[in-house]
Image 1 (cartoon, helix red, strand yellow):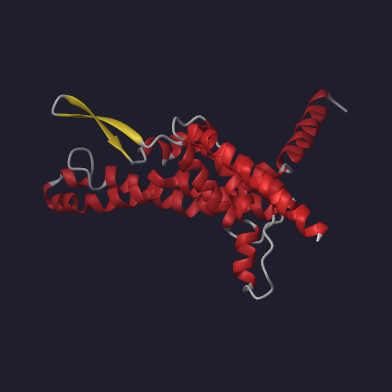
Image 2: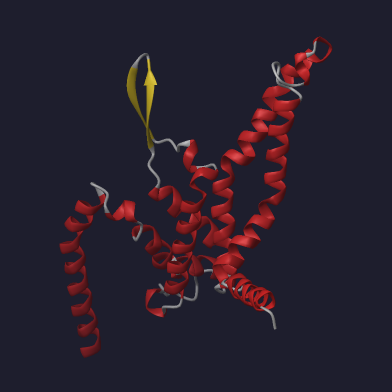
Length: 238
């Protein structure tokens, strides 16, 4: 066997092994689902620049100048597709990875989006009247489009993996009486496990308000734990 054949075989084996990783499988399936959205967004940019642009497009001719009025339609399509591609990718990666890990619901996708928004900054500095103004409670475009795609994939994989590990622990389940409907009981049984990936996020842990609040609540949590243990011992003794 020649060196070229050995190289092709080794690269093929590596590609097959790399393609079998569950993270790669989840990302691949997500982008296959997003393919129509990407194509529509790309065509909207193409039509906007080559047909409806008044300087360089077909609308630069006098007889096609009416096409300029239709350019905001293509801009809206581009904004709704490519400008929010990262949000859709995070949601779909969470769903696909949740399916691989055995989850039957769509909650892993929603959890991935929640954790991604939780770790992204929500304040933006803008120049207004030659002065810098701080705008709060907004999501910058750089975190919703493709510029933060790798960050979104990392947060989606991390949050769903934590949730999948916690889902296997029976100690975190909240058991409800039999009179409670099954759907309500299932929601409460997974309550702690669904909140855990959120409070494990770096931004929550390093927040200037969340960390002091957690420290202040620690004595109360310990007091409740001691009371609960004493009550359990008293019930066993009786």
